Amino acid sequence: MKRDFLALSQYTKDELDALFALTKELKAKQKQGVEHHILKGKSVALIFEKSSTRTRISFEVGVFQLGAHPLFISSATSQMGRGEPIRDTARVMSRYCDGVMIRTYGQEIVEEFAQYATIPVINGLTDLFHPCQIMADLFTVMEQKGSYEGLTVAWVGDGNNMANTWIEAAAILGFDLRLACPRGYEPDKNVMEWALARATSAITITHDPAEAVRGADVVNTDVWASMGQEAEQKVREKAFAGFCVDDALVALAKPDCMVLHCLPAHRGEEIADSVIEGPRSAVWDEAENRLHVQKAIMATLMK
Ligand code: CP
Ligand code: NVA
Image (cartoon, rainbow, N blue to C red; front, side):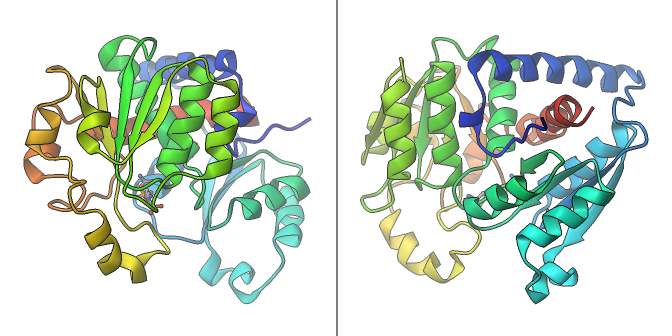
């Protein structure tokens, strides 16, 4: 049976820990120049229905480092952009490739793709989840703090795909998560219900950034308008006033806190330039770790 990576909720704590352990091993091998062609001779399709810098590059490079061949496929220049059904594309690609990553809009699109594909499917971001990113974020936390156990993570901003995925991670892995979102921009209700039904840690939502950040080990934010929400930018700028991760807000967290942002960032909106460029920022390690965690995910699913 093939296994997909569509949402963290498909995985247990032990399985995610195994992915982190493999990430550490593969990162060390890559740094030491030790060949690790775990997917030698295979081909991995990378489908994009939305823009990307990090996801595209880290997957292309990661596939190459695993000894496999990456295929960048833009929906706009494939038949997907002309309405070929997802289920047909999934079955055809399964005849050529050994795995596929998709970045798209609805979570139901990756689910349908995975249902019809006979090869592993990885979610490279949907409107609902961004699981590869949160794996990279957590791996960065583990590198710098030793573990995610016993930590408090603060989320400041939109209750978006990143926030939803943090909620799943907190419920599975058992760290505390405090989200501060403007009214009307809270995370997905079903995701929150799922998490609260199983979490052993505290997962809370507030409308006050200071309340979420006070004493936190990790402070995390993201753009106010995600891909596909560009038309809402002006309305969101008003709604998110007071939700900028600036020096005053970070000063409320632990003195050794880490600041994360999945990037791309809008300096002066969700994060101050002095914070993203400051000593607490771990955003470049976070971006690098996309490469290493995704290699571990692909190696596990496609070998
Ligand atoms: N963080 C992230 O997914 O970046 P891209 O949109 O550039 O892929
Ligand atoms: N929430 C953002 C993340 C980008 C990596 C978006 O979906 O556009």
